[in-house]
Image (cartoon, rainbow, N blue to C red; front, side, top):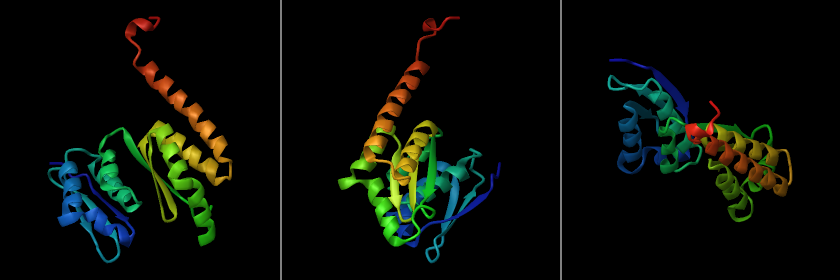
Length: 193
């Protein structure tokens, strides 16, 4: 019996119901697959994630906490459950430094979302990373390589670069990612040993 610890985090009040789910299903699913115990304070949004005697994975508490954070940052539970895959990570970029007024936040969010969601959709399609823009944050879920490309695209938009420039960057990076992934799967006979 191993006890791996406790993590505390906080989610926005308006996302508590989503995190709990209908009849507690979302919370229970996270607890069941990670073998953790999750306690959510419905008044202030403080979430406590604890290991249990059944917790086998030393990273289970961390994974459960990240799923809760992802749901709190606007992802649907289905998209947040991608974090159960050990290759997936959650990256949260806070916009407080870029958007210090409500008008600035609206402008920045508009640039990141794009007309009818075009920019967000392109970032997701080209990188394979899931993107959520919620409140004062942009959150990404994907492999570390794909999240890093998406993060760079987001930062380019935050700096004010033209959408066309960012789309060209994403196109180039998508080709590089595909090429790198293909080279990982070369048969042993293709290598000069």
